[in-house]
Image (cartoon, rainbow, N blue to C red):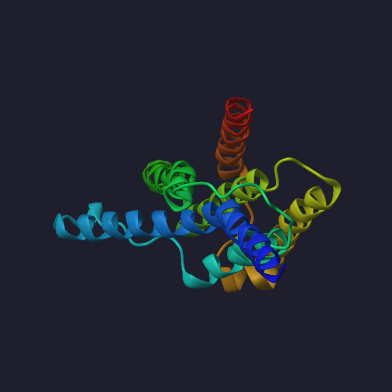
Length: 207
């Protein structure tokens, strides 16, 4: 009896870890790829090609509170006694890879496009901050499928908490961001629309 209870709890733990692992692996993958790109750009020897890592630690820490912090913590308490997937770590990596690549592409695109448009450093930093959070929230939404009332409330709390801190002037100074301008808001809206369409296409494929 004790063994059956232990086995059942072990299955729940493994399944829940596999369920939320992509949320954490996204940051691991994009941080590694961006670090490689930054080092490569410095080795090229041309000043205009040098890419500095686009996020400061406090920005990532703040986003983590609402993406990697509270939502996965709550989701780990769910009851999930489905059979454990084989090679769940590799599958989690593959699920996280598209979002991580989207972060890398967003950084390169915004850096190049924003510089050509004459955006200030604070405008570029603000847009990248919002894009990083949006991509992270999409991973949280995927982890919350299928939706239930408390899962929807969890998503609302996470997004609301992020917006509440991102729009607060004193915290903006700490994060070295500002409010989205007309140009950056337009780009952000297009990106969010693409994220929304990609999410629905992934949802239809999985179903």
